[in-house]
Length: 142
Image (tube, rainbow, N blue to C red; front, side, top):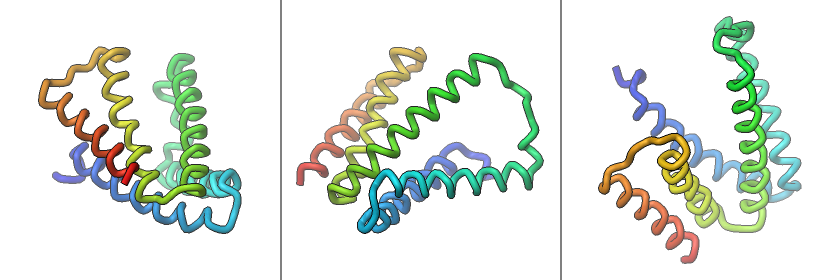
């Protein structure tokens, strides 16, 4: 079933990320980028809170431990910093140039995934990562 595939969800994520960039660019055109990030965060909190309540997952504490909580906290801080920087970049630059540079995170994840998490990439995988990096840079400079 397609909806149980990580590829399906990753492509859906990419589609929503594209919509995020376009809507955010329009949204920050008349308001402060930090305020725009705050509004976006409130919307996300509301939507996720509703999903957790409706599905009964809000009270699930399975898997909670100090290490998981620490890394989720760090992930949240990194997400917040990323969003603040992204919205500031969108306020100042073209979405068509900002979004590809933001996707250099794919290159950074590959490097950190291999060095920190011990994950593996083939030569073909590294070539793809190199093309993603080069493509992001070329688009941003055009």
